[in-house]
Length: 225
Image 1 (tube, one colour):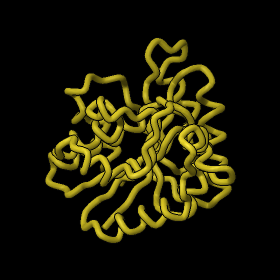
Image 2 (cartoon, rainbow, N blue to C red):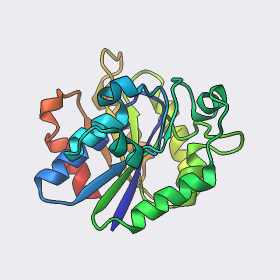
Image 3 (cartoon, rainbow, N blue to C red):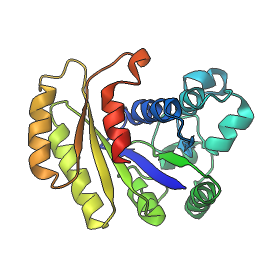
């Protein structure tokens, strides 16, 4: 069993895109893989196929049925906000200890590779005291950090790297998703990040249509994990 946590520098950066690409790449090569999206906000049961858990299930070759969504995403909230805010709107609170135990049990019971996709960026609040970074630290499994190439991404990414290093977590790769219509060329972002990333590989992910999920970039990332 091998587990990895996919996090990002912010929301809508491309965590699910990267996770789906890795799932398809590994499945095509015969590697056993499963995925979890334990916490999801902005979830509409009537449009489950378009949700992050729905997209992950499709990549896994699993039906987008309620039982399957519940299996990989136990904490689902309707409001498209941070988990602490979305839970509060429903008179609920996310049980951090239960979240950690859920992930640990899933990792212990899986014989192949398990991807755990976080929510939002690395510092998104889960409850009144804990963030995604606290979740990652509690699990203490290798990380994949997904970043963008938009103006300002360098600061966001380096801040994330500093937070991860401060917790002494293992970062396996930084994946830079090309931001559509960015004023900053992807190559320039890559060049600068590599100067600060030390020994951590930095992989470019040019914008690709869904049909190209087996692109060489996913093979490069997959080979690092």
